[in-house]
Image: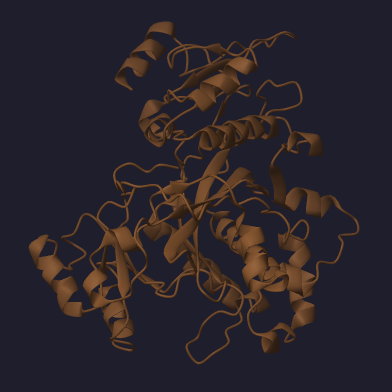
Length: 463
């Protein structure tokens, strides 16, 4: 970064500033921190010219640390109207574990205060009927007393603890006794005193009834592209995949410390289709309900941060959503990654990620292919590729007659007795948050029940 600042001072220019005039045959200059073939191939296919970060660039595919430096107050840079970058300045509001939880909790509370029926609670435990898509979670050390109170309501429950600022399975462990948590606190020399602890953790009620395939636990990796937070414009990539544990799932206490059983940082991308598998084993109706609920949780996780995100028109972002399905086919949001891996480990993996990047570029760029923040960010349908529109609040506002979205495709399916309550109110709210019915959007989540990858390595997030 110091080198970049020196270049700025030497040239008398702001960081990365392109020429003020854009000719009709302007060649797009790109810069990237990541030496990934799926990126370079897509850029070169478009005839783009590779330049360094100190040169004039139009498009920057940056790592999150580079982006943080560029948007820092100290950098002093300004981007012009013909530059784009692949992260929002405060993406961590969605991707950092503790902030994600805080923002979703705040979002639900705000809806409650407004008397919005989406925030309605059902059972005696105070669970949300329509917004119950994250496990009960607390941030430690700040919420330690609240966690203890919740833990004592069901002392036989299991909890999973994760450091807020780490990924790839680092630092994760399970506990089923308070004594184990206190012992960890002593051994790690991080007493539960908010004024003393620098690193925070989230502790969540463990999903101990996961849906299993071949006896193995798995989670979903889905890609969501956001081109604007206000108005919210989001697209869902249909070619997600499953990641399996390498050891069959076991709930016994003896296996509590065996992360091969509980962590799913192994990608499986071969043959098969999760939707077809579930339709054949569980039925079409409940499968449709599951995929509708997945879209629903993505929508509301984005709406939870839409008013806190710095909505810079130079920015877009592709998020990796990690979702676990329980044996009742209820989806749970585990976390959101602002920098999903673009490393390719198999031919299918490379094809999927090549399509992902190609489709992203087609959506975020204007029709002439040259970055321009004055563009309204409404791509033509033929440019969506394998993405489908998840929601576009601007388009919804422009429509004079918004088609009614039926409650069964607009809100999570759970208890048939509750779906009729305030149904009219929910229906009237649905068009404002959903552009169209979503139940058929995720149509190709790949899985393979016969070839589970071997050699689990938490430090190597193969996706």
